[in-house]
Image 1 (cartoon, rainbow, N blue to C red):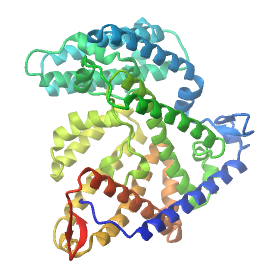
Image 2: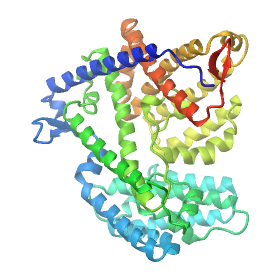
Image 3: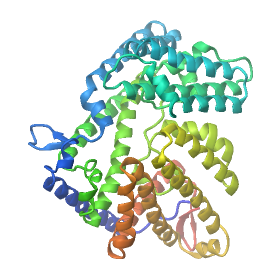
Image 4: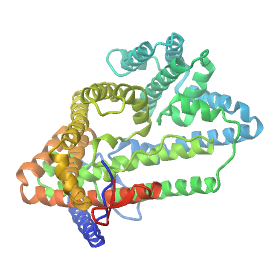
Amino acid sequence: MGIKSALPRYELYLYTAVLGVALIWAGSWIFEASSENIDRKAFKESVQPGWHYFGRKMDAADFEWMMWFSTFRNHILFALAGHVIFAKIFSLLAPKHRSLIFGVYGGLAVLVTMGWTYMALVLSHCIILYSVALVKMKWLCLAAGLSALASIKLEPYNSWQEALVTGSFDLQDVLFYGGCGFSIMRCMSFALENCDKKEGNYTFCDLLRYNFYLPFFFFGPIMTFDKFHAQVNNTQLTRKEREMWNITTKALLHLGIILVVDVFFHYLYILTIPSDMKLVAKLSDWCLAGLAYSNLVYDWVKAAIMFGVINTVARLDHLDPPQPPKCITMLYVFAETHFDRGINDWLCRYVYDYIGGDHDKIFKELLATICTFAITTLWLGPCQLVYIWSFFNCFGLNFELWVAKLFSLPPLSTIEGFMGGAMSRRIRGVFNAANFWTIILYNVLSLNSLEFAKLVGRRLIFKGFPLSTLSVLLVTYCGVQLVKERERKEALLEDPEPVKAVDGGKEKAE
């Protein structure tokens, strides 16, 4: 879809005002629900004492957020700080061997944290997949890797492997499955890249250096082997102009966002409220819409911050890690929807783009999406909720292609050709607004529960029709148009050539 001509400035101001008022209105409903129900029995476990400055309890329902920025914050900072210090020293003393230092430090950190049995388990996966990589058959590498991944996701194999790890501490389950899962995905990347190597093979040491890079080991993101190998073996360790300033600025920005999120958790219990279905059933339609939207925004913020912290360390090591995911507010198509750009890049490189090609053939796209979401289902851990999530997102991705194909055929393409660019953009914005809420509903079920997603869908689509349905779509339409305007300006800055005068002097970007 091309970039259409700009909308009138007053129209964009109107969209901004409507969107701002709606967000404040929905936020006020959530604040009221949080304040009035703070002492509910269902809130006792997840709403805990917060900062004494505010005199309010805070939403502590997300274990992952609390682990990173409260409970185990000092342990994580200690491990990453040690990596940064050792990496800097040896990058100055022996830049040619810095990848070896990364691997040694990471391996020792994993050994000390998880024990020798866990280290032996991870190494066994590495040895098996390295042996398969030497055959240089992609289908065999993928089959072996997915079998290894299934062994830590499916019973009874995962319980048997977990029992091998001795000792017990609060983070053991998280580190066990995170480290094993990401290790297997990295080993698959190594094996598939080795298949493309024309002469010889990469060494087992290359695999170990890649896999045991500590910042990525337990929590990701996944950086494909081809990129990591090229960057970590670059001995020309120079910085671009203002690069350190940008790294420092982003680190301070991440710190600021962490503080802002913690402050919000004192006033808006967006994670705890959806778990209490008796309370949710009593809330207004606007409050439900705000909860569904804010849960996805929070999940994006969490991913962006956690990966941002890790990426800051990686950039200090002169690496260019995967970027944070695109903000959910900026998404109105399934093709750009993801919460982990590392996994997304991995799937696109080895599955989705490999099978789907240029993604304009309906049956090839269907096969590519089915294979992609099948692997994603295995990665997330097969269960009913994941099956439903995968099915609807796979359907949404294909449905977009079917609709695009339909609108590219006459008479619909002819009718759109006669429209002005602004009118075409408005009509597309209506469809994009509806698509935005399908993305919200399809993904909120994986973040909260199937019951919450079904309740939000019923209230906004059926019980709330027409007032709630149309008003929420109107607000979403305003947001979509503002996003489209931002994308239009960014595209014109990157490539101003497509703008030319057509239709009697009106500007339209083809």
